[in-house]
Length: 118
Ligand SMILES: [Mg+2]
Image 1 (cartoon, rainbow, N blue to C red):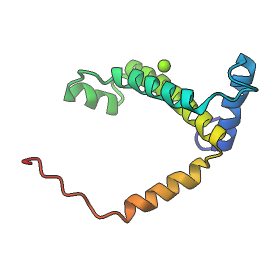
Image 2 (image 1 turned 45 degrees about the horizontal axis):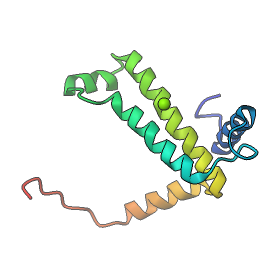
Image 3 (image 1 turned 180 degrees about the vertical axis):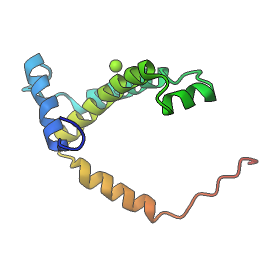
Image 4 (image 1 turned 60 degrees about the vertical axis):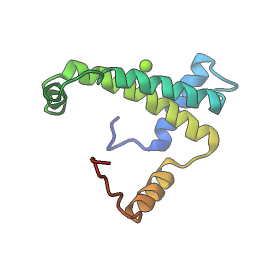
């Protein structure tokens, strides 16, 4: 299974089945408030892998020269994503519809003029 042959619905179900196997939540459904808070913790864990990196170290990540760190980042990203999938499943949010809707909103938003001198 990979991004090309797996739907978001299948990922939501896989995470739900994990919750059921682990006995998390009520019938595999956890409190969305708790999920949102846990997502933030996992996002912080992801950010830790970028903390204090200098530009050459960041370039090394992007150019595939630090696969060990990328693997750690991928694992934390998976934690964030799994909570996101749980959250959207619990609240009945269609990820595809919402991402496409948001792309449309951003696409039609006037550009923000960033002035570094301000
Ligand atoms: Mg984690």
